[in-house]
Image (cartoon, rainbow, N blue to C red; front, side, top):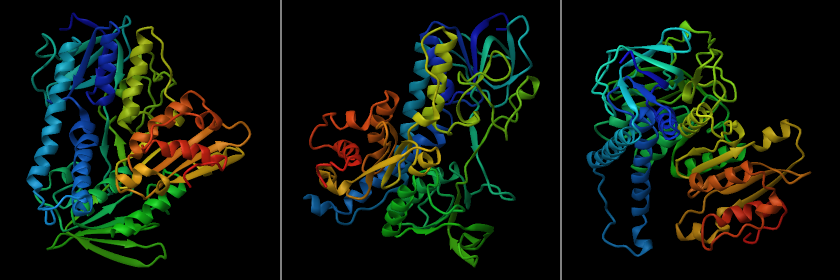
Length: 482
């Protein structure tokens, strides 16, 4: 094994790492993918994107069943939730896609090395040495490699991912939960407190409220989903309160205490008054920290920024030949699709092929709660802060025929544009299938389409995507369906 020198060694088998490996192999590079667990896919596949969206889909079906008679379907007025089957379906989806990744490794002749990979220092004679420890090592897949203590490579990509942050002084268990523990609860809790209202927090709040749990959200900042446009936050708050979710913002959590019935959370509210909430479970969803502490980064010329790895536009670190992608990268959103595209960029660049650097203002943000949120580019406030003369259009879904058909009228499309040249600066959607609709807006911005050009793009009727045609038209006050 030590005699084999790979073109590229990737540490971490999540979406960033395995995507980088596949593209590099497609472009003719000899690739080793080092993964310390016995399954590829990372947090996204096993404890994040995929299982949570599987649960959200079940919740969506459940919500539709509540109105079955109005859709002309009778005999389901009293559906029963089978929590075990819900979890089984979620797990089956994970297994299916895990096997799919194993197949892709073999198909692309990628060597998968099981173990914990660590940099040992700068390249010597243009070759890096990565130590691979036996911890968590499972069976190798994808090639002849069965065991390894070292991997040699001309270039190295770090894609070690992230872990859920916990409030200081607390540890995750069967009552104080992170995204990992909440996905394996043996039964549906009657009540749930969610600390934090980013994507993870509001998505789980949506799931458990749909199934009948009493849900409370506690957020430290002045509004929920704080990275979104202010009007999106306002609309989601309205929708959540309408659903019966108790939303508390500008709050400071003081302490979490275990009780005989579950947990008690003490916090200071927006008015500075002490409050107490009790529930069976509490979910701590206060962000994710980069997994960089034990990757050998201290052996090379990389200075971490609050634990994150600084990179240039091509994802290269300050150590020549070492790249970083995914959740550990400083300044980029911790999203699976960002990490995956960063992997494509690195692989393409190393293979000498055409590549475009990842732009933060072209990254779609998607939150799969009900109603869904999809956004890209600048918010209205950010555009104004940058000095643009801002022109805004807004189209409520109540004017869209397909929204009526799918019984989802809440929300709107908001377009933020530059009044001088008609440049699309940002698009913010809250409503049915917002996470799918946002892709068109990313393409429009990537290709530098103007509002005027988007007003003449034909959309099929009846579709939810027509809301975008009217949304862009609304910038000029010429939406048809309002």
